[in-house]
Amino acid sequence: MIRPKLSPRRPIVVAAAALAGLATAFAASSPALATSPSPMPSASPASPAPTPSASASPASPAPEGPTCVSAANAQYTHTFRGKRGEASITLVNGPLCEGEEQSFALVSYVAPSTKVEFPQYVLSKSVDKFTSVAKDEVGTRSTLKFKVEVPTCYTQVDFVFGDKIIDPLTGSDLYGNRKVGSPKGIGSQSKGPKAWYNGGGGTCEAAPEVVVESDCTGKVTFNLINRDGNAAANFVITTDKGFSKAVTVALRSIEKVELDAAAVDGQITVTANEKSLWTGTQKAPAECQEPEVGEPETSYESTCDELYLLVQNPKDGVSLTVTFTPSTGTPQTVTIEPGTNKSVQFPASKGLTVVLTGDLESDEPIEWTAPISGCDGGGSGGGDQDGGLPVTGAAAGGIAAGAVALLAAGAVLFVVARRRRIRFTS
Figure 1 (cartoon, rainbow, N blue to C red):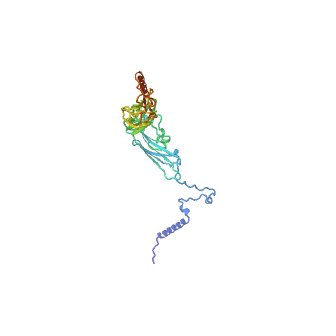
Figure 2: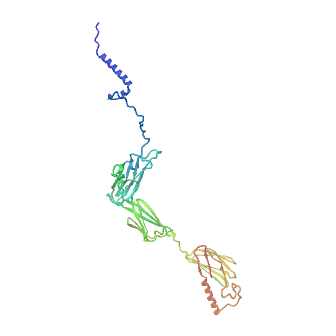
């Protein structure tokens, strides 16, 4: 029987498979060796492995929550578009630690030219700030955004650290390194473009107006107006008595300044941007000025026959209604219009008195008294005197002179007003 020759491949394949199986079993039983990518023979195979020290400290646990930063060590990035009046700033290593904060301001000015010239006056501003987050609070703003109005004339726009706004901006007081993006100082804490801009076109001019109002107490209100134009208006109120007050009114704004009579005593002048707008004196409105009222004149005369009372009301007086009440007899009520006279008579008798009430009131009763020369004939007003023939000649002339003297002494002036009190004197 002829047997075919065996191929040498088969023993080789079988041997290779056996070796692979042995290697797999060895790796499973030795995990440390299996994970070592490049096992190296030990330089001192006889040396025992080092024993861990019992005093070794365990690894510190990672801190919980975000870390914080002080305002002095805070770092930012920012954007700035001066022509559009826009800016933003982002805190990149925050939040700020508890109790810390950092303010920022975007400010637009009206300026004399496109170059850095002064003075410059604030037109618009936007202020905001980063604040800390307490331990029991969650979340914080990492970005602040700002927007201001930019004037259509020459302007400067500044984005600065802090909330202190300089107005007006002068050569002696500038923001310096407070500007965001400055190469040094606090401004260097933020990375980004330079955050200041000079530009625009056309001269900035205000259009100031003033409206002056007075009241009946002597107070004066100055309405300082700057509706139009493209710049702030600088008003100054002065008097010739040394008073002075300066007020800056922003574009499209109105400021009211109220001053009492003492402050605006004398000639008043209001100027704006060094131009005179108004000059005058404090004057109460026409409705505050009460018209002058004429005073009525009153008089009375005692004769042997009657007590005669007269009220004369001037043309510039007011209508008066008066009641004359005698101690004996019937009261009489009369109305005296301006420019007219009214008289009232009561029969003479001993002890007769008359009281006035209404728009005129007497301080005390008006009493009838007999003439000094006495009464003759039919007159009963003399009271205790006996009747007789009328006195004539020189005696009559003396009586007439005495009567005239009594009439002159009886005329008096009274206070003007309704329900006024008056005094008749003989």
